[in-house]
Length: 106
Image (tube, rainbow, N blue to C red; front, side, top):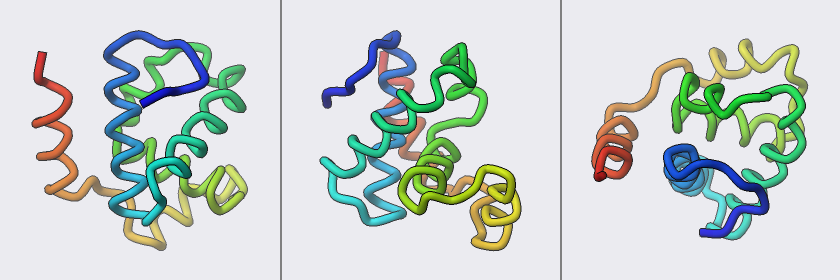
């Protein structure tokens, strides 16, 4: 998977899992999911000055955020309400299991 930005191996792995979640939960094809992730990362890098943000949020919530901000062109000020109203406050068990199987492989 090729991103248009540089990051460390752990963050790249986390974002690759987020791309998978964009496909699974929001039905983007792989190319579109990568495009959304690239746009989000490159647009918001001045706000998220450290990749620690992505690790703090986790792969599923990063996918939800990317879908809302880039995919839906939602307004950041109401993201928390949208996330709550659409049932995305908790990471689904199967997403946690996928993350554990694919992130902790090294």
